[in-house]
Structure formats: C-alpha cells, structure tokens
Length: 365
Image (cartoon, rainbow, N blue to C red; front, side, top):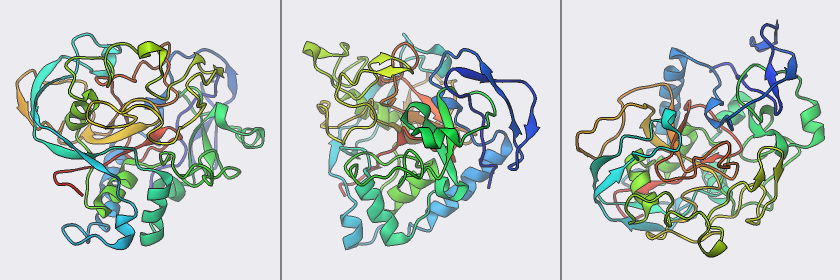
C-alpha cells in the first residue's frame, strides 16, 4: 500500500517549506497564512510516481475477485443493488470543446468521435446500494484500508478538526481525516443513517470497479460519459443547455455563495443531495453534473488526437484516472467544472467526500 498521508493545504493556509517527519513518513509542516486559487479536487493524491501505477494494478486485482458472477444470473443480493438503466443511443458527437473553461485540463480540442450505444444507470450509486454490495461480499474500501480519506474542511466538526495537526502541501480546503470512509463521510463522529439515498462517497477507482463488476457492469469511458451527459444536445455547456438556471430553477447541486467560506444552499443542499433531486437530462439521467464527481475508466491525458475515433478509451496507461461532472463544491470562481466538457483527475487510490460513480453496460441489466 502507498503511504496514507498526502499533500494538502488547510483552508486559508499553505504549507511552509521544510518540516519534521511524521510517524507515517511524510514531511509534516507548520501552517502559515496564504492564498489558494483552486478547489484542489485534483490534488487529493496519496503519493506520486510509479508506485501509483502498481497501486492501480493491485486495485484492479482486488476488484477482479468480484467478477465471478459476470455473465451469470444475478443473485437476489445483486438485484437489490441494481439501478434503473436507460439506453444511450450511439453515434457521432462532438467530444470536448474549442472554448475551454479551464484550458489546462485538456478540455479541447473539440473532435468528432463515434460511440456505440450502451446503457447507463440513471443515478449515481447510493449508500444503500453500496451497503448491499459490502454486506454480500465483505468488501473493504481502500479508504478503510488506508485508515483515512479526504474531507472538505467546512464539513467537519470542531472535534475532528482539532485532532488534525499536520499539513503536507497543496490541496486547498481539504483535510485527511482518520476514520473517514463511505460509512463515516465526515469522520468517525458521522454516519449515513439519514443519507441512504445519497451517493456513496469515499470510493476509490478500484472500489468503483469492484462494485460495477459485481453487478455485471463497468465504469463508463470518458467519451461515453460525456455523450450521456449531453442528453442529445449538441455543443451545450450543461446537460440541459447553456443557461445555468433556466427560469431561475436549479438543475444541479452546486455551491452558491462565496467559496469556500459560505454556501448559501440556495439550491436546498449544503453537501450532497439525494439522487434524483434535480431534473433529469434528455436521456433521463440525473445528477450528471454537480452532487459528486464520477469516476470513468480512462487514464488521464491532456493531449487528444483530432482524428476521428470509434469508442475512444484514452491512453493505455497513466498515473491518474479521469473523473467527470463536478460536485456540490463546484463554484464558477474556483471550480468551473460542472460542464459536460469539463474534466479532472485523481490517482486511482484517491477518495474524498465529493467523489462517487455510476455504472454502464452494453446490455440492459
């Protein structure tokens, strides 16, 4: 396993150069006042370098043990974890954008690709569904194995925040919290009792693959995800069009107010919302932007060919996986990534309090 501590910046502070070694082996650093200019979601990395690739390979092996039911009749337990799926018609579509909101993320160039038809879950995987998977298989997430996961500082109780004394560099507003996991989204003094219909959080890429494999599904490619997000519309910003709030109605769970200090919850939610709380797109898919980030199967790259491709799957290898859709923490001033063409990345072992997934399949499940 990789080192369980990671680089981060406490809200309103940056890391001071130098510092002592913590018991985990990472450099601990005194916090000093500073500034930040990003939500930092793409900085939630447990480590850097070639070790990440090995970790991803180990994660894939962990996920593979749940594939024994593939192409077999689903069990009663599996049926209880299945989401309704809708057919996503295949064909050519414009992938990416020539007007990137965040050019450094590799949102462009816009290119014509062909994607075969497939089926997609209408909603993000919920706590109830993931609990059914864990109860049936005994699966243990990577956050539980590592012993910690990232939580947005504004969601934590004072008791939990008071126990966090280390900073190890560069992901604003985030803290690694011991005991944070899908069952305890804000640390050991939190639970999901009243959030069973909310999207599951703190799942790594391998955790998501394990669940999808168990229900005879898989993660979408980035191209599949973006085609589905667009809901049949051509070259629009959002799943419903170009206006963020048509007729002043909220269509996604996003941040309103001043990020990161004040969320007015104008849309009704400060953190995650129950799935299907907002209108579906043209394909009948809910929460394609906002609520939680969603893992895809693709390795991350910011370089894309303009040659027409059929079912593109991204690079053959890498260190980060692509995630799409933004989350309840997204605000245009800091993280304008709640657009269909927007994208970000994390290492496959990353987990956080705004990161989830949904599944796809070539057949109706």
